[in-house]
Structures are given as structure tokens and as C-alpha cells.
Image (cartoon, rainbow, N blue to C red):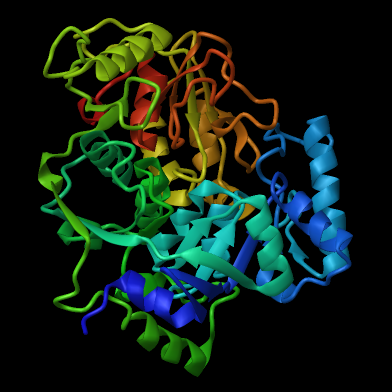
Length: 469
């Protein structure tokens, strides 16, 4: 019987079938960060249990670590305490720990793939909802809660209920200036933030196959903003070439054998999905959010919705949601999104802080300067990304243009390290969530691609990056 990619990965990891769609799965990799890692490891220790397979667990501080240049663990005091707990518990438990300033440190969903810790076909968990990022490599990756993380540390297994399968086919060719981030926001805007609830989503089609691996990671990163825990893209030769030579990847003959297996993981012809959607990639424009949910996304040449228009607000709930979002964002109905003045720009996060993201932003910043009154940050996703970008001269490009070059971490995406957008300030951000208060109390966030964020920084307003070419 033909099977989907998800079915193949799921079936390969079932330790025991539990009935009613539930199964006990083996977990191949467990990523731990400074917010969710210490409580889980402390709970295992409190029960007097060893970690089942500490060699399969990897820890790094990211969420609460300051991104301030010259930082130390204690630059942000709460972050320092969490850093110390993660470091000490990792040492006691035999977990590999990547410390600040060391190659390998960074946002868990950036350092995991770049080191080859995450590989196609593996199950990967982390106490973070954006673990689905790793599905861009063809891994079965998903976020877990604290009790699940504790269970996995102690047993290397998790009890999970199998979701339904959805395929989103993206055919056609993305236009100039249109990126995986634009595609992701377009999909969420079209389908809605709850469209993927209860599903594992496989992205397929011509436009997805054309994406490089870093862009695939971006696309899968935003799967959870569709409501799904799992996002997947089938491994192909581009994936194999990207993984080759990474520190934890197989080598020699073992790599060749692994690669042959990875290439077998594509969905079979005739595989049946519970739901399918089709996206015309050629119709996607540079996209930006206007409201307080990733589904509040429109093309850069679009206009804001009108709560009084039945086409925009077909019922009282929709009307109330639009009114509340416009009020919070201090925007007017029917106004054009392009030209909206901005105060801050943040380029970073697990969605868009990899080397190609920084290159794209630098291409816009080169020879230009951040507009007066705008504060713009660039936060690399990992120490390795930072060093590679500096070796290419990207730091000099950004600093010459008036951007601040920061240390690796989550930074202003989640504002868990004291770095926040000021109240009522408007920020164009390459992160993945624009919820109320996500970047700080009263902060107003517009999600966009790195190139679009850089364009906003140098013009002082939300701008179609294609006009700067």
C-alpha cells in the first residue's frame, strides 16, 4: 500500500502500538535549551533516574541569553541563572553542552541542522513549538511539553497520537524578491492559523523542490503557525549535499548508505492524504503581516481589511477580531500596508537567522543606511553563522549601514532575555509570531522576510523590496 513520507517516518519509529491511534515512538534526538531544558533534567534527577541515552541529547542556551555584544552569561541576570542550571545539569547528566561563544552554540533549531545533529529520517523533539523547523531536512520533528521532555529523557520514547496527513502543493515558480518566508506567510494568510490543527503537513511541488535547504527550514518553521505540530519536506539530492560533511553526519561508506535511505523517504505515488491544498507560487508577492496573528498576512501591494465590509468580515467574530487587531496595531481600515512608518527592525530568530538570510538582508543594506529614527538589529542564529557571516564581510556591511550586529540567540523574537521592542513602537521582524506583546508589552510587530525587513530599515517604512533593486 502506498505510504506518505509521514507514514514512513512514523512507522519506522513505532516501538509499540497502543491502540486508538496511539503509539510509543523512539526518539532519536532531543534538543534542550535554557528555558525548557533545566526543569526537565531536574525532574529526572529528582526521581533518581539516569538519562536513558545522554549521547542523543544536546543542550545550548538561546532563549534567555543576552545578544548584547561582549555579553557574559550574567549580562541578563535571569538568563545567567538559567544558563548555569542548563550547564550544570548537562555536565551531571552527560549531555553535550554548547556554551556561549563556542562553535555550535545558537538557537536550537539553527544549530541542530547545521551540526548534523538533525538528519533526514530521524525523530527530533525539543521543548519548543518551532521544532517543526527541522522537518525541512525530512526529519519527524515536533515540539513537546515539559512532562513529555522529562519522559523522553528518562526513556528515549514518547507516547504520541498519530495525526492526519495534509499535503500542500506549491507549484509554479516564485518571482524575483519572493522568498520562502513570503510563501509561508501567504499560505497562512490564505488557509488560516487553524488550518493544520490535527494534521502533519507535507510541503511539496515545484516551488518547494526549488528551495534550498535553509529556505525549506524557514517554510517548515512556520508550520506551527498553521496549527500543525509537524511540517515535512521530502529529502532529495539537495538535502544529501547539504548534510554531507557536517560534524555529526555519517562519513564515508556509512554516509552513502544513509543517503540512499534518505532518498527513499519520498511519499509513494498514489499515497493518500486526508486533505490537500494547492498554492500557485507564481502568484505570491512579498508578504507582510498587518495584525496580531500570522494569518493577518497580505501582499505588499495590498490594503488592510475593513471590518464593515462583509467580504472581509463575514460574521461578528471576524469583525471583532479585525477591529481589535487594527486598534492594537494603530492602523486604519482599507489603508495600504506599503508606506507604513516603522521604528524598529529585527533580523533574526529560528525562522530567518541563517547565513543565506543574512546575505539577503545585506544585499539590501549594502550602500544604503538605516533611516533616521529607526533602530535595526541583526542577530545571527548561531555562533557558526556569526563567524561565517563575519568571514564574508557581512558584519561590515551591516555596521556601515547603521545596523547593530549582535551575539547569537533568540533575542527579540520572544523577548525572554530582556530585549524588547518599546511599547507602541512598530517593528518589522523576521521572526514567526506577531502576537500581542510577543516582542514586548504594547509592541507592534509586522512579520516579513529578511530582505523586506532590511528594506524597511533603510527606507523607514514598510517597502516593497523589489523597488530597491
